[in-house]
Image (cartoon, rainbow, N blue to C red):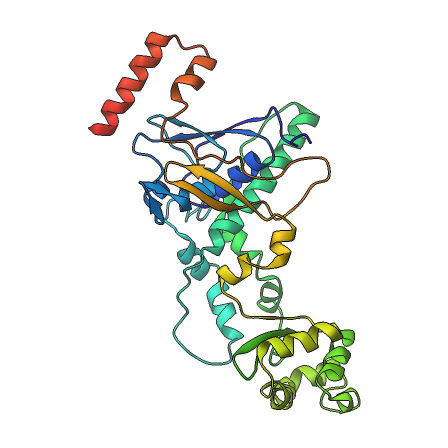
Length: 346
């Protein structure tokens, strides 16, 4: 099977998470991605887990790329964009979560006033990298049509704003608060299960699954608007049934009746899901510390490969090879490598 981006060469000046996530997707689809790093390397090379000095966090983001060490690093993904009053401000994902309104929008659904949550999952980085991936492929398509390239400026702030579709409209127009969301945790005998009811059919399935057929004619719940306003009462009645059963028992009933739901799982548990195994969602990657699993792109293609190449380059591993390819003589390469090494040590 061919690779969709075969014969495409990408110079990757990105660091940390968002940019490397984007360019690894390009590598997974067959592009030759050359990661250009400063002499001391991308900071992610030092992030745990570390085995024999090799970071699997770095490896997950950079598997399959070649590496060249040069005294030059540039990234077109930024917190606020390349121009404007905030362009020079420093930003990391948690800062952007707060600046975009995402954190407070999330809290508004929790039904209680409290200190904003700590977020250790860097949504803005992965999301922005994914938008950058799409923008790069779009620009490649346009170049094929017009013969001209272009610069791409991706903003983390604007990327995060795309997650707040309803909230952006509610910020502009007066709307009646919809009441409690018709999704969320439902208590069971041994924990919680996530329930999401977004259509009349799924509500009817929930009523049948939980033994509450009268809900379909109950004035509190029969119509969507009233159901949303009285969702707390519905959950109270539902939990009198669900707390008599374990999470797995509730899940089995919901699955039989077509009720969208899932137990709350750890990442380790999610990785062990038979569905993940069926879709071959992970690839084994080799680095200086051994092997580790890296997640494949979350899409399959019928006529092209989409998976990381199973290696992580050591810093500067391909410097000589790549400089020779673009015409440098052996003596010139030796001088450049020596200069780069000296700059790193200095």
